[in-house]
Image (cartoon, rainbow, N blue to C red):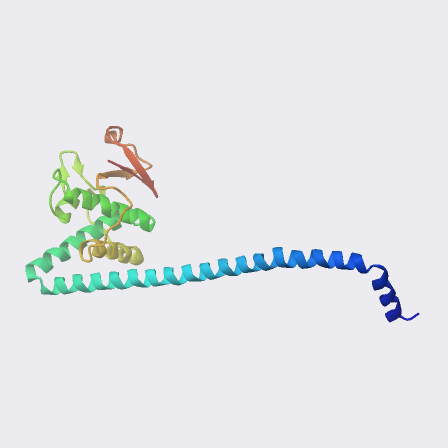
Length: 213
């Protein structure tokens, strides 16, 4: 008996079992594999659509930011010479405060220092300009320690460029940051313990700085 004959005899003997087993596989294919495959395709399609929408939203946000920057630049060049000079000085003061207070801090740490500075500018308890806030003194010394340390030099080019960019974003392009609340007006390095800290409410620790309201 050759192999074909043996296969034929096997099929004749186990005909009903094969049909049952075959039915199980057909059922599994139709009820498990096909829906599962369709579900996977639907998930992939939804993911692709989400990625497309996200890309469009990011492109829209980028375009909006570019438009805001163009409008700000247009406003700057239309301003009077005195207004432009004042804005330039304000940007320099804010950039110096960011740099000398947080040159070694991460980006969020630099932005947080800038926010504290601007929160003071907007507060009735402090002067109305960035430069006046930064260079403000009291009987106990300077509001920002670097101001009382004499002549300071910029030694980190990349750190300065980052500080300057943050200052321009805030003062020229009116960019809003939400790292700290408007009530956060104080901070100190984590390796010192000033007496005034006990009278404030700690709200965040970013890098080596503790921030208070």
